[in-house]
Image (tube, rainbow, N blue to C red; front, side, top):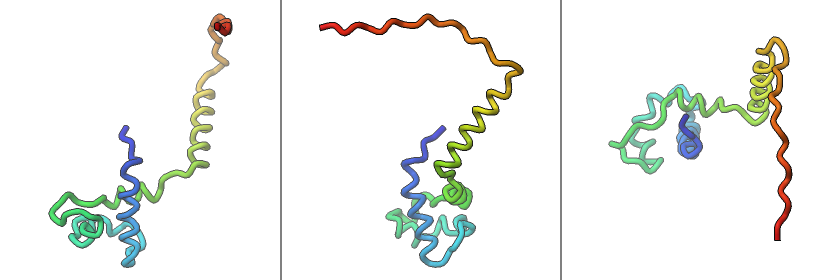
Length: 103
């Protein structure tokens, strides 16, 4: 899985640049991704690679917040625990003795 964190500032800049002239939603991103003026405003060459697509903008706008991530984590744990008919037996692991401090 690719870490998208480094791309978020660039995606946010594209989205803000779309909002400024009145593109209220991300539906026009596919049309604007090759627009030379938008590319120049984002310090890119007009002949350079295209900007992000409408689906990428939609993913940015629908990123889950912390509460949603925590709820998802709880739901996954509940689903995992519910997949067992009975509580699994624990394997006995001997306790390790704490190390004594040495001088």
